[in-house]
Image (tube, rainbow, N blue to C red; front, side, top):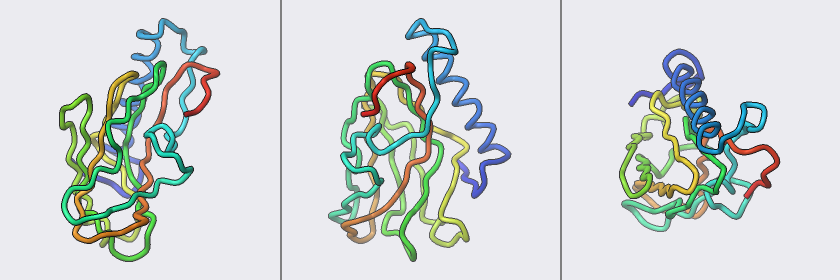
Length: 165
């Protein structure tokens, strides 16, 4: 896994490919035409959060579950292709682990983001989660933080007209 501070090169190629894959899956599984689906930005509610901001309670050192077995809604497909760390200074989280349908699918080592000029990074290995599939995200912390901010950057492909949440 590599990450990039700009959505260009391999990160942009991965983002485009992932979006094409999700659109194709949605069209096939939902039996819809391209004009019957919409692509939009990922929001906290898509991952089961009740607030409009990606804020998490890191209550202990070690692994903390920040998204707990969220089932992606019917008629919805999601991707995560980057993160934006929202706090100034050093993040208490050094790694993210993504589990899809009970299988570990990504480990993102994010500690180096603390030393970069930009707090936003894009991955060259986005993760996708299909409709009715669970996703769990764990964060490895070196300290506690009651309001750790980490915006997950991604897309949602869904049937047009669905209500968000």
